[in-house]
Amino acid sequence: MAASSEVYKDLVLHISPDKFYIEPLDHQKEIVIIDRLSYEIVVQANQGQVPSDVSSKAICGIIGIINLLAGPYLVVVTRKTKMGDINGEAIWRVEATELILYTKSLLHLSETQIQDNRIYVSKIGRASCRERV
Image (cartoon, rainbow, N blue to C red; front, side, top):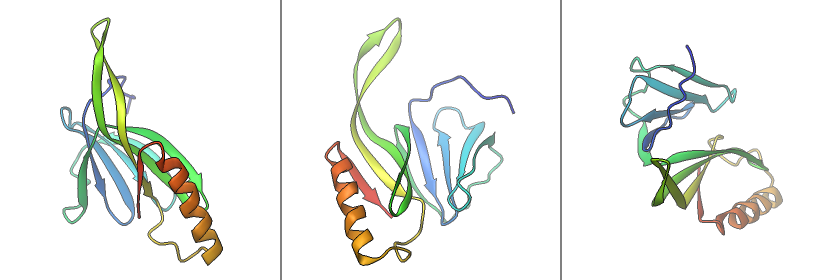
């Protein structure tokens, strides 16, 4: 499938135990699927891949993926404010973000590593992030 160059304003993040599914609210023909186990990221035609028993939340965008002691975290924008327009395109300020851990638990870490990971997450949190496992 050819990659789309369209930028979406609002998205829905569906979180299952094995995958993240990200679909735009205004164009549900494509879906981004991130495998939480293999870390593979694919864009596919949306053919109802999202299971019915997942948790879902509205997000404004994806900043990226960062690796901390606990493993990779998906960094998503949860709140934004429109600052203006340039050449007819909206300019947004990120107001809040959230870190979502790929792994399902912290059992693979020692107590010291868990404490260190919390410190790292809190330092990132100073830039308006929340951690979610």
